[in-house]
Image (cartoon, rainbow, N blue to C red; front, side, top):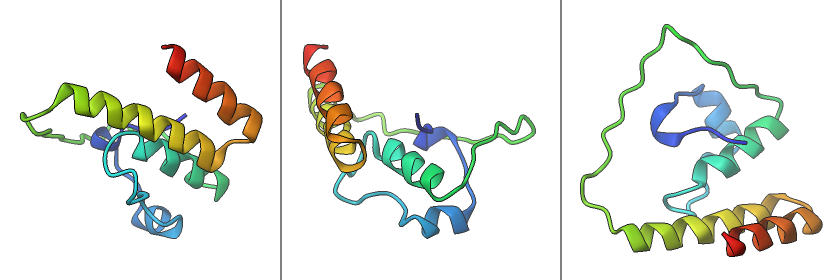
Length: 97
């Protein structure tokens, strides 16, 4: 459940209304937490084929650091917004992967 942060657009009022991206997550899975908060606030998602979004990611990436950050943020998202049972399940699945 989520959106691709680098390949989407959203209403400014929706983004600001739920507090935007969680700054502690920095990069990676920040959109998952945002999507949960948007849905909880009653916003919905739609595909709009007439819209084009351009994303130009940085060519400088540290693959290992990024994997660690993605794992940390996945677990953080689970523990911030899911039930304890769901968070434990996601933790187990993430660590086994």
